[in-house]
Length: 378
Image (cartoon, rainbow, N blue to C red; front, side, top):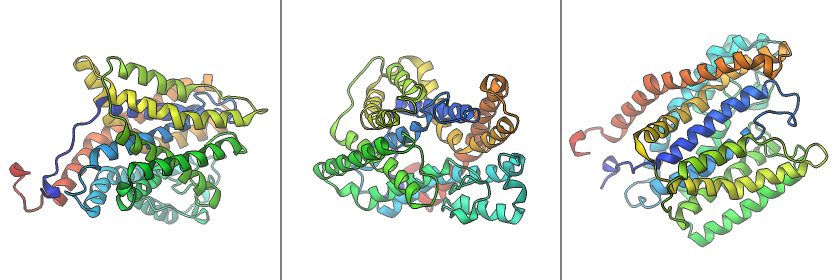
């Protein structure tokens, strides 16, 4: 069987739903972040851990989708499939970031008003490739590798995880993979409990410290998800969706642990959730059974919208943050507008999904994998 005839495996619908819930929590986290004065008074305090949860999910799903198929596909085929799945939304996210950029000009983002259009367009085009830019090309002031669409940094590491899997880790025995995961987990614990900020936040800049954080956030979650798929087969659980959904919301929303006096406690909280709780949640989600058509539709919608809303919402957040910071707006005062931004983010993501992402991916699949083939036989 050639790659052209390789059919997609059935999804885990609850895992799709959990990905959507986590993505919505990220949007809420970023809206609340606009009103926070420090890491300690941030409402929905641990929303940043959604990235690490996404990596666990991704490792599990990649293992499920490809681990037993390497006799049927090549590394090139795998990379093409991942590019078709991820890159179209990376491109539209960068373009939306460019369109919104000058609406974000403010005292909070003073560099924007000084940035010529040609420079912004160069950054936008580089963003479409997902190649990171150095700090010297920063046009916002946050030193992001993707200053028009900040969350794209995690997609940069997602690609690295996929490449490492395709080139090397897919060949690892379970023993060797377990050793890798154990060592990465030890590094993760060390990073979180010794962090001067008491958390695992970071990974979005091109400098040694931020790259170290980014790789640490990738390596354990992604490959622990792969190991989970290989070692623990899903069972059957009646209320898996409800239980796993409640758990992920609690983990991401819980207030800061330990305070300023014991910041290591929050770091330990981060580590324990990434190492223990997130794999448990993924297992529960993979084992859960949905009841009725309504639950299936909810999970499908959440899964479909999860990636688009994650990669397109932040340009709107930049605008909202500039307004909230410049005018010193409290969360209570900003809640009506924050709610509108949340709805706008969801609407923008849905429009991008239906009128851009799905059609483009369908065309790319047909062009790349069905060229010269009879669709009825594929």
